[in-house]
Image (cartoon, rainbow, N blue to C red):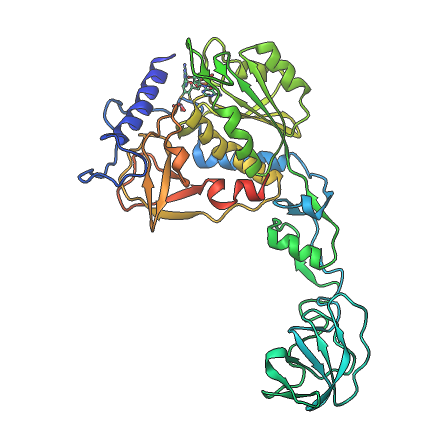
Length: 451
Ligand SMILES: Nc1nc2c(c(=O)[nH]1)N[C@H]1C(S)=C(S)[C@@H](COP(=O)(O)OP(=O)(O)OC[C@H]3O[C@@H](n4cnc5c(N)ncnc54)[C@H](O)[C@@H]3O)O[C@H]1N2
Ligand code: MOO
């Protein structure tokens, strides 16, 4: 570790601690008397950091988007409607039929012809049946909502607006306008009308619309295929931490998040700290994106950089001016294959996920970028002197409440967060409007929509 690395680490830890004092639960109201800050807690000496290669946070996100675009056009696939949720339309959704496809009753009641009273026919008309018999003037027939309107019907009389006399004749109890409660064929769309443009992300409502409009399959962009490689000999997959080993927090966390960001997870492999195993895994992967966790720094078992050199990958981003997570990286392994290296510290990995993997996956999946938005901070947040900070926040009314336990190795803050606040270098005052990155569970409904 160089002197500068050590100093930067000190700053990072100090920031987490500074914001955690006095320590309180993430959802508890803030303490009073905390003053706005434009700097950090104090141990850091101002210095020129131009020598390190790190990319600025906004530029890193832009590079990740461009990298996805440079991977070339992805071929659309045809999927059944029930498989299409969360995917993006590769062709406009054009109506395959008129909607409604026949004149239909909007209400339960009677189809009537001409002015009342009407003689009520014995039979009735239910939804889902073939064309009913033509009405003659002065005739009515019972009809259900959604049933086909008999030819020469002039209106539908709702059941609550009709009375039958003792001779069985039907009288209206309200004025009845011509065409009332008839949904004419093609009211919503005509065969061939464009219902949704190319590029629309398919929501539950879009699934319903596509089905109503006659679709069995949809042409969509496939989910980008992602392989997750979890590195580290110290990681346990069950039980309590023991003898210097810790539980793997990223293997359980990242796949659902990656899916929420549009990915199909093709494999999760735990490779330990074995350089050859990492090399082989990268060489044989056919994923469009390989995500590694850990091993991004320069320790004796940090194998990501050497492996990227060994496979001849091109580093597009080698470190980002963001805290936590600054050792994150992005490489092009092949023209249509990228690798995002997430740092091993768990919150640092989340930072890398939303800085590099999110824009890359979003672009590969054909999704549009969410509209940036800001909210005022309920409390001041300390800043890094040179770098952007991503700080977990909970949305409380009109404010974003910064959460504590936001150190690089901690998940306690993010576990109750709705978003990450983008804190500029130098920090942010209480009340200052900050850009927020929504966490997908707050917007997309991981379990519901995007599994
Ligand atoms: N000489 C330097 N040392 C370090 C630097 C640096 O720039 N120069 N950066 C520090 C920062 S900041 C971070 S973040 C980490 C990044 O480390 P790596 O990506 O190499 O990750 P590891 O060393 O493998 O692990 C770091 C830390 O995270 C724990 N870890 C790893 N994987 C998991 C997991 N799946 N679940 C839970 N915890 C995990 C691991 O045990 C370590 O404690 O490097 C600093 N050092
Ligand atoms: O400080 Mo590292 O950036 O822990 O993520």
